[in-house]
Image 1 (cartoon, one colour):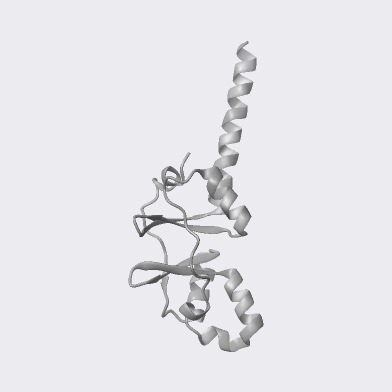
Image 2 (cartoon, one colour; image 1 turned 120 degrees about the vertical axis):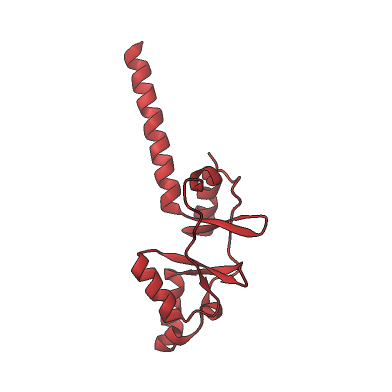
Length: 142
């Protein structure tokens, strides 16, 4: 299964913020939507990722002044991304190796989706459960 097939059922809308967004506004977006990261755009192109970890490190290093900075000043860049053709297992492996929890899905230079490690783990669990059920059915029928 590819990541592209996994996100195919989505409407294609990805919540983003721009490099000019004030950090306090981006933090409010994360909290209001109960999400862990936002892709950051510049002129419509993917510029980086702003995540909960950026907030934690920014507050530790810069104190309250961090909240009035722009996302472009504090985001993680460049963003690590995958293509729609990337397999779910390859995506999970990349996230594990790089210690990240979110990946922009980019095709021909355009972001077409955003996926979390939770999305990929849920897919794997569903797949394993389906395989276990098929084995039980096979054993019962034999």
